[in-house]
Amino acid sequence: MGRWGPLCPLQDDKEYVGFATLPNQVHRKSVKKGFDFTLMVAGESGLGKSTLVNSLFLTDMYRDRKLLNAEERITQTVEITKHVVDIEEKGVKLRLTIVDTPGFGDAVNNTECWKPVADYIDQQFEQYFRDESGLNRKNIQDNRVHCCIYFISPFGHGLRPLDVEFMKALHQRVNIVPVLAKADTLTPAEVERMKNKIREEIDHYGIRIYQFPECDSDEDEEFKLQDQALKESIPFAVIGSNTVVEAKGRRVRGRLYPWGIVEGNAGLAPALWGQGHGGPVAARGWRQAGPWSLTPPRPQWRTRPTATS
Ligand SMILES: Nc1nc2c(ncn2[C@@H]2O[C@H](COP(=O)(O)OP(=O)(O)OP(=O)(O)O)[C@@H](O)[C@H]2O)c(=O)[nH]1
Image 1 (spheres, rainbow, N blue to C red):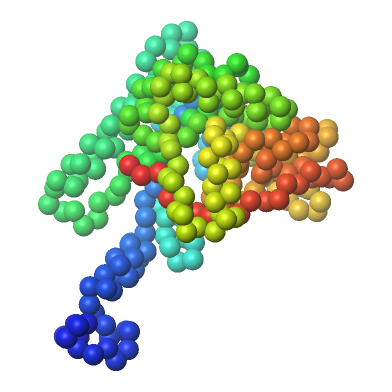
Image 2: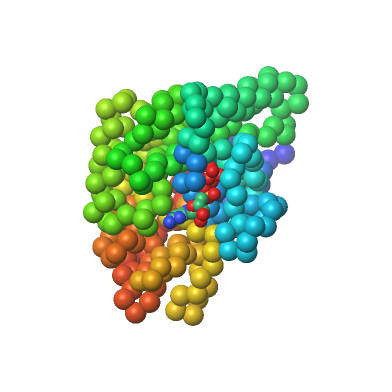
């Protein structure tokens, strides 16, 4: 029988079993059990969804696919596919599920092309609801889609009608994080122009994208600045790559150009940085390798939950 705080003098903290230890107990239990997070990628066909997923998690999630050529192995996604990776960081387990959706826009008739994706999200909610209402609730797996990274084409003039339709169909169901795809194909000025246009249109069409939580007032200044920069960077400009290239004696995932290499950062959510930072076409967070390197200070990624269901 344990000792209860106010009634019993404390001998040492370990013996204390009062309600003040509850947060620790809940924390320990959650850490032991691990967390589930499901991330979806959606958008027009060929914008680099599968490639970015691979780049972000530094794995080849698509290794089972038929090998076409050694460099660019990814083929078109034709159905909703799920990939699960178990990640462990400092003893905390994360079961990460990536849901890749077929790109749309290729068909002659694209009416309601968002429907299968919306249905998928709804089904996961229903499944979770059924599991929670059942008798055996101990080992429920949470497959609800927590966040959807929505890819916007860099080749248009802002949002396309299909983007508006798609995001409006999804914004009540899931946290949407819009990204400007293939940012290496634009100059920094073009990236900035596109971002402004997209922000305006998101506002204009009443699309509700994911809002980052307010930064705590007791956070340090540096963190507040990073937080602010992150919020102002939406939609994030992203660059993905499946190929490993050699830069300054290091092997990195990147894209090789005549003027140098655009390199990605390692980590869980690294490539989703802000606007262009100067240099031919390198987006912030990507480094140009070579003698003319334009390396920006690498931002420290502080992992925080960015989306909740
Ligand atoms: N320039 C550039 N090309 C990219 C980038 N990301 C991917 N690509 C290329 O774009 C092509 C399509 O990439 P995928 O990842 O298959 O695109 P997807 O959006 O998954 O396509 P679907 O399966 O049709 O939905 C591939 O040849 C990639 O190498 C990028 O950031 N910049």
